[in-house]
Picture (tube, rainbow, N blue to C red):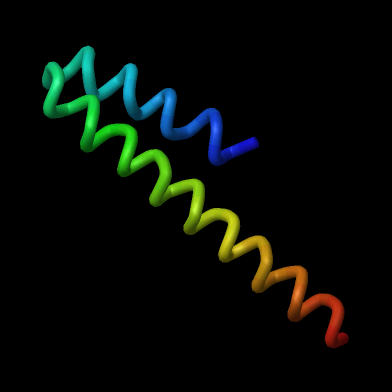
Amino acid sequence: MLFLILPILGLVLGGWLAGPDGMIWGAGGGFAIALGITGVMFHALKRARQR
């Protein structure tokens, strides 16, 4: 779900603030944030299962 919503929000926000180049950077940033959140959640679940 995050991989769909955050890049689209980044795309819209980047386009609104900085134009076409901002759209690319916003979508990439949104994807990177979604990937980071997913990694942190996976790591937390992995540690919780070990206990």
